[in-house]
Length: 161
Image 1 (cartoon, helix red, strand yellow):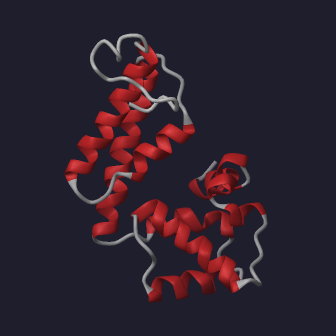
Image 2 (cartoon, rainbow, N blue to C red):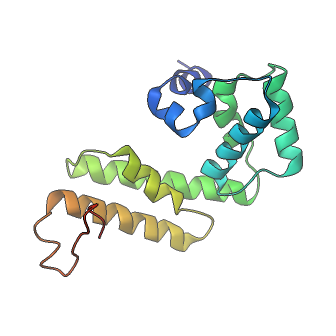
């Protein structure tokens, strides 16, 4: 299975439709919905809104059917330039760390937790360190829930430290 097929198979998953509501009911005739979808992709990948030229290009690609909506995330990511490449690279580094830490410590992955960690990762290298620290805290809370209050790291009702 190639990268395009993998991307298309992800696009129909419930979790992905939760992140990108447009994929649940893709209406390519609705320009506002297509532009909102593109905006969500840019925000998720690059932590920014699309520039006018990028938004116009991707709106055209989707509305004309040149590229299917399921491939938009992959295509936009692969078209990243400049700082956007660095942001994606930083998110990949933290995401890889999350997977390694949860697997190595036999801690269940939590999609909302992973998304929350990656949301704070941007261009700055300190974002990577902060993201990894969030991962470490998530793993510590899972492994030693009774120890955190002893260390002065009490959780609130939502389990946040």
